[in-house]
Length: 277
Image 1 (tube, rainbow, N blue to C red):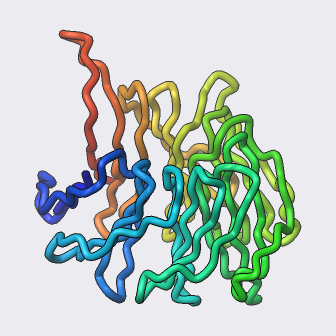
Image 2 (image 1 turned 90 degrees about the horizontal axis):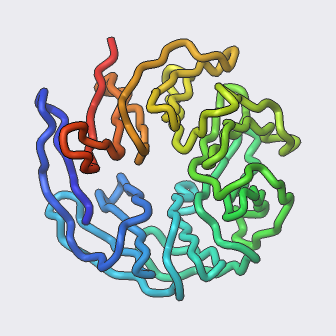
């Protein structure tokens, strides 16, 4: 199920729920021009939703295994999906017809599309086993594997492009955040907050040039891109982070995860918005 929230009020309330997938939803993609939402799922399908009415417009069934990630190639009017069948499927963003399929040798957890100022296009894939795949010739849809890097010790959870210094952020269920040089595709820096802390989730705030990360010790930490040092941290009492996401328009941080109740030892799932001034 996909839940759409309204954050205009002090207490967030649910606008609508989109029900249609038969297994957990893995990724979401909003296409502003047609006001549609694209969702992927472990049920091997991709669904197209009208964001205003909540109506299911179309179901795409090209993948033969769970679909993990979606990415929009906005200047090409194409979006891409990756799945457990080790394929990248490219779709027309207007008609939703398949345009091209690319076979790869591993499962892809996350993808990011990078269009730099010098018009060099690349699709970076974060894979099972902690590998990064740099795919070139994306603009012609004649993909070529440019570089394969062993980046982390586990499957990659998040990828972000930092335009200000032309670097890529990667994060996995290990103890570091990696910063990669877009030009050379080599490791530029490794951030280790503490050797005992796992960093499963991060987000990047493009407006304030900061990294926000959730950690296995229950703390949320804010890291400045300028010097890659922690400038602020606060405890959330989480046993497991689901996601962290900065919402610039509202100046708050969305945090989801799991928390054990002290009175009955039960685990609950929740989402909260932490306000910043």
